[in-house]
Image 1 (spheres, rainbow, N blue to C red):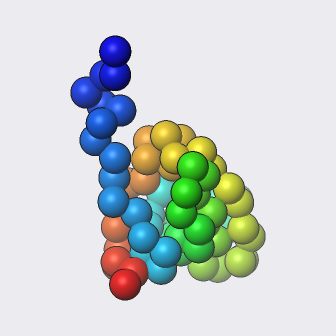
Image 2: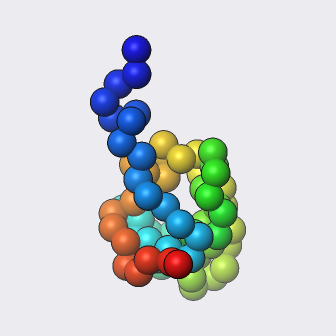
Length: 70
């Protein structure tokens, strides 16, 4: 049985700028979505660090969208 929360996928597109709940060690909390799939690839806009997060982890950590990609 699939839970209701699992059916509600956040619409994520490459180029989206998101704010995460916690700051990155460099001090920034704004990230650009670079890759979308089972894992979400994001890049810090201050130090350009690139990380991959599982979709569920990414959706829990997102505070909000700053701008939307194409």
